Length: 321
Image 1 (spheres, rainbow, N blue to C red):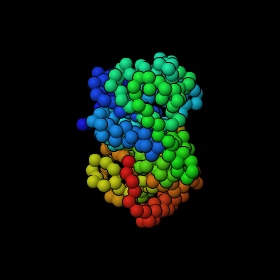
Image 2: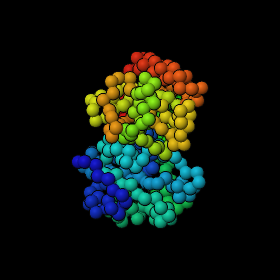
Image 3: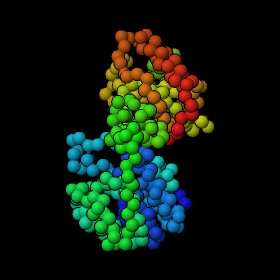
């Protein structure tokens, strides 16, 4: 059964109201290993009982509504989140608009409203620290009490820890901002990735002897500006290709306002303008810096390429996005 995606609970209700529904609820930004524990519980229960596994998530992040001047920078877009959720085997993904009307639902009314729209709601799966309802006043205790009255089961997953600290989207965002890709990937359970289309460039890399692919990519949560080892997949490859990437403002040659992602493949390049690429970020080589001139930049790019080749020569197969 292919995964169906809906833009609201109301939109999903006609197709989901008549089947036993196992519903995981949360923001699930990044769909990391902690989220897997919640979502996979719903998937396994649905398969065991012959029901449907679904995810209820939200867009935008509530901070966009309540703290518009300093919102949470999200790890991934709704489209990428849907793809990662699909890979976990859910049958449906509901992305509910988080606006003032939805935010005004009282915590005590949240579950009864959900039950009216989805009368065959069998079990809800959440993280132990999940909050809901107006003012985030609803907690797991209120959820369990409300569910009991409605004949709904609740499964609360304990937070998974790594290095004695809970795995969280906040922790992953911090690692990305610091360029700590191995640490971020360990919490995600897959390689952090970017998706974008190759756009025409100024051919400076080619003139320096290191041709690059200019990928259009505008993430919410930006990784640290600098040079990385990456793997690149696209329409003309059967397996990801090793590469070195530069993400930043290019202070030596341009000092752009908008960060750019440039990819130099460490293998023959089959890609061209218009190709849609997936770039998996593996390790941080060095921070972005300004050089005295183009020749100094060329020497450093050669050193970056050599460092990337050395890194790949010492790595086992990496996990894919």
